Length: 203
Length: 203
Ligand SMILES: [Ca+2]
Image (cartoon, rainbow over all chains, first blue to last red; front, side):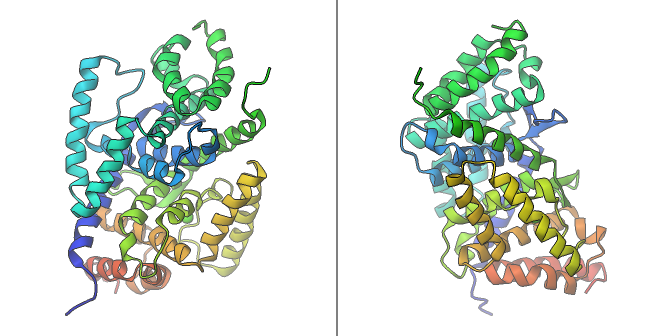
């Protein structure tokens, strides 16, 4: 019988959505605000989407919030295969290059599960985020970077303690990217975190 | 000095974003696909945003995916104060009415943390979702309801076992809402879950 729906497109889509569930099992370096446990990449993605929406007026370039939300919704999916690389943990260029290869393979596999007329544009959104060239991607990257800073401040140090991070290291690894996409936010947040690094003797 | 940014708007926004972090601590009735633990409301929100985007063409009404994503991003925030009410656990009308009051109070508090020209339109998005009248809200609700069904199927029964759910109960509590916003999806998913209920003697 003709049920009036295209069975094959749902047959491709539901396994993709089931596979995406695994992002909830990818643990990040940052801990929740209350320090009770590490954050996972799915809930992190949700949180930074809220950040991106709430902070959008602090982007110096005009951005499409809708497109930024799409980027952030997808941006960590490849971690299902490639894992999360802590920003203060993986800094070696060779390791980062190997990771980029694993992430491309993950994108092939995951976006390849969808009907191609859907998977290809979604993959393009992810590639745009990774390239960090468009205004939307630059802003999205700044939001992805600033959220763990706020979590660390909330929980008393978090990954700064675990990875023995100094303020100059944070400026290099995080500040530059946040400053590029959301300079007002970085100015504000940096003033809030400076006392922590001062007190910890990590200036 | 004039730093060129409006300090007071960030001063309101960052505490809101810190508060939102607590949604990661709200546990839901459903378990992850691998059954290893219960899902929390933040990662659930992320997952259903991906659902909504991927399945959008199965909405019989034309929907704005961007607006649906906004709804789903915000839809569970009130659970930070009001908690999650399991759909198969809280069915008493008086309890549901009391919950609705707690959720309104939560919306007052949480959206009230933002600058009012931002908090008010966000709250309106949440109210639109709750009212389930517009095409966007009807579709968003259908997605919110169908995702736990897929998780239960993946992990071998999940909350259907915990709450002793029959297929007629599922049809009433879940199927009607999914069918309203995404009938093709419900037809497809119901055919997939029927064997589980048959085997479990829960038809
Ligand atoms: Ca809910």
